[in-house]
Length: 304
Image 1 (cartoon, rainbow, N blue to C red):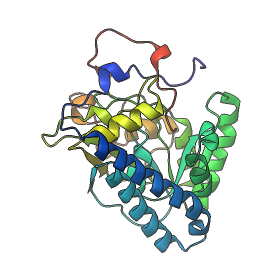
Image 2: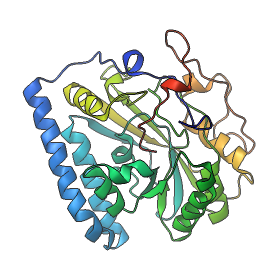
Image 3: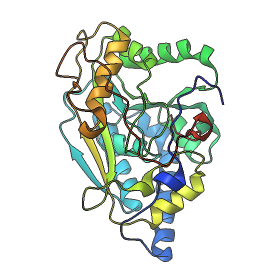
């Protein structure tokens, strides 16, 4: 793993516990079977669905994404309005492999994902058929070409989802938004749509079972999610940052980060994307964990 790659201190033992109700083994197996069936259907249907006009295509993607999340027993709550149709750069925080269908349940579009996903069984075919843009995260020299591909997609009228933290965090804190992808929004002159994702229990506390962090194997994360109960997947569509409000990618990335970061993580007095045209970075969040971790325990299997 290269030293320049984003790193998260979150680990499964410290961050992925579940304090809510649990599903029995038969129900968990049924959930995984239902999710796998939906993946197989989507992998075959993705190429022809891409040929449909935008409105029916997006309706099908929203329905499938919601069904996939429901297959794992998650309730889905969408807060806010998606706003006018058209190209925009969608910039959520990053918690789990569930983030991609959660964003698609409200804002269907293309996604920037790591190139390793191409070789994943079923998921790789589905991602390619859905028009996913791939990035080679271990090759910094490939970054300009990735930004150019993002710019072309935005200019072609697509929504594109990018996870600017570059690594998954459990949700108690978050990483710095990397600036490169925001250059594509500036070059294409499209708005940026900050999005806040959270997985919560009935009392509003964080649901750790959904966190896909550190060296967590995908199979272990799938099983932990399938066994957990009482989880709501929340997506908050925050006010868009219009083109021209920020002329540099540093300020634009900071404004999106400040908007996405929950008040407790952003710190007192931290500006949001709509507070100021020159929003500053929030103070570094305090991640509640035992001890300090280095990049060696960072998220290596994150989808983006």
